Amino acid sequence: MEKKHPNLIKIGKRIRSIREKKGYSQEEFAAAAQLGRSYAGRVERGEQNVSVQSLIQIALTLEIELGELFPSLQELKTPYRKRLEDKTR
Image 1 (cartoon, rainbow, N blue to C red):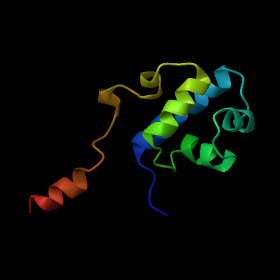
Image 2 (image 1 turned 45 degrees about the horizontal axis):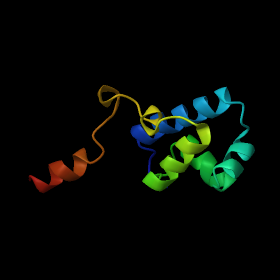
Image 3 (image 1 turned 135 degrees about the vertical axis):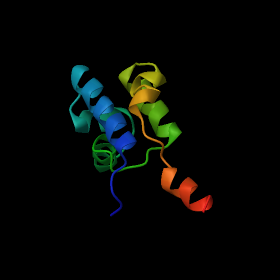
């Protein structure tokens, strides 16, 4: 399995935190968001590269703005640095 990307971990932690504050169990949340429970768990652990459509569904279910799922840009890492460095060589 590929190493978890720090950005996915941060987003997953935010989703878990908001879900818990809203009083959802992971199973209840997954059902309400129409996501598989194991998929929702992988998203929360940062193991799943989640689609924009799934993020929209998550935000709608949690009744929050989509942007609340994301950390500030200063907290994020460049996702493709290695690939960009390889192309410049």
